[in-house]
Amino acid sequence: GAVVSQHPSRVICKSGTSVKIECRSLDFQATTMFWYRQFPKQSLMLMATSNEGSKATYEQGVEKDKFLINHASLTLSTLTVTSAHPEDSSFYICSAGQLQETQYFGPGTRLLVL
Amino acid sequence: GENVEQHPSTLSVQEGDSAVIKCTYSDSASNYFPWYKQELGKGPQLIIDIRSNVGEKKDQRIAVTLNKTAKHFSLHITETQPEDSAVYFCAASALYGGSQGNLIFGKGTKLSVKP
Image (cartoon, rainbow over all chains, first blue to last red; front, side, top):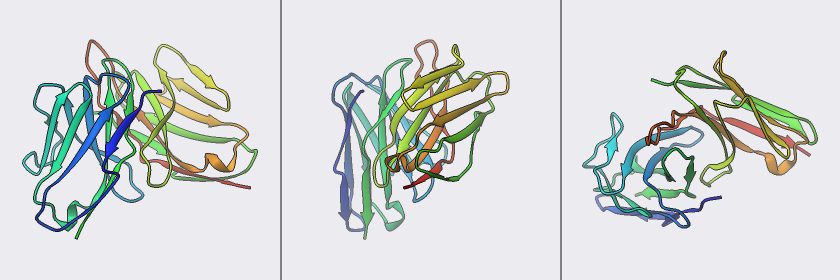
């Protein structure tokens, strides 16, 4: 199946700093990439949808200035958590898909903000 | 909008037994239903999916059934093994006309297979 990678897998940062997470589709071109957040023992919460070359569409309640998303190419999307605070600590997961095809998920990034 | 409900939230079975997880959806426009397996600390992994033009799909020990009239779909795992232990998520979306639909997830089922 299709492979999606995320980097880094874990990151610890100080409060107030910014953290960038990369999501790459390794063996296919992804027209759409999705970013999710997952709290312990809960389901995935969609944060935003991004299409290559256009602005991301954010879900209600997700601050676009807080979570910056860039989808610069058909194989790369980045999520930047700006001015991170302890409440931003979570498991962030991206997924990638093609038109009318399924989504494939990355391995996730564990963010801990101290 | 779409709403997906998943039951049970936890399921414990003996190795070799079958496991069944059920989901219902609300939006009749949904036409794509994937199932994901998530192990601790990892991203969800697609294990099987079904589109609304078929009623059943099977892949070795895993099968999915879809009842469009009743708006429910189920995951069946036969001859369960300890390595099947994980959290399973169902999802629904509408894929059509060049649009990549958002996946709406169920809340997940924690499956434990006891040796």
